[in-house]
Amino acid sequence: MKGIVILILILVAGTANAQTANKMKFVNHTEFGGLFGRVKFQNPYSNNEQIVDSKTSLTVQTFNGIQLNRRLSAGVTLGMDWYKAALLNPIAAGLRYDLCGRKNVQLYGSVDAGYAFTWFHDDSEGFDTDGGLMLNPGIGMKVGKPGAAAFTISLTYKRQEAHVTKTPLWDQRERYEDRVYNRLALRLGISF
Image (cartoon, helix red, strand yellow):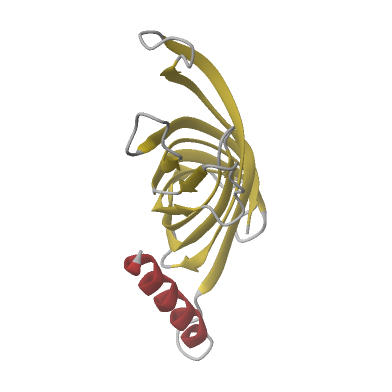
């Protein structure tokens, strides 16, 4: 968490200094899409049976940073992920790297690593949801003129942790659930 705050301060100081020293370019990449995955969970009506189900969730994120060189940009990613039982807000340090491409089409790689908060999540009575670590590596394609706005499509793997504390039942001292959301994310967006 401290590392993310330090990175944000460095980026803010760097962009403020960019007006007087090197003309660093601001980068924005905003996307929305779906999180797709299969989930295995305990059947609430049977102690020995597990159920597997397909899940689809909505995701929105924005990457804001600076262009470090012709291919690499670094910044901060802010997002919102709507899972069935949790609304998580990840904040992450992020990198975007142009891998290859032609004039108007670029293949790029991305990685975001950080922590999710539950700022907008509202728990039911007897539940307390906390966020956790998040990792989101992926690959995408930008279509547009270099130096101008571009349409993007990306395919990433998103691993998101969450911890839920529940009110203990009559025979329990504590009750909690550690969740790990493993999802394939397909997103559309724009970049400039």
